[in-house]
Length: 117
Image 1: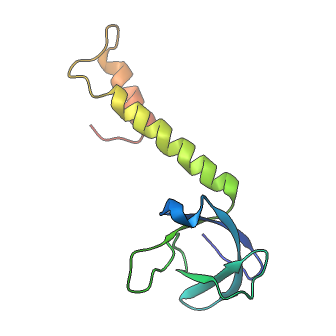
Image 2: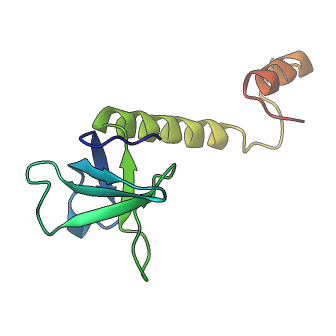
């Protein structure tokens, strides 16, 4: 993800005590770190930083407090994709192919999903 000063991003904390998500704004972009502040008051004391090209927010000596996404919609799209992928994976836990599925079907699905058999 590319960052520019003034760009709004969506922060999603790992811990629900910190809320469900909030808008942040990029306050500065350095060679390594991108500084983020609250969208409603970018100069507030509550700031975060993220390494350029990454999504996980720096937690200092502790674990990351959360991730940033390009927008709230990008976060929702990421969650929808993850949920769909997990559901698809659960459908393939069976030891045998479902009735009517032939080898050509499996090879076509593998090619579509970029999976090597």
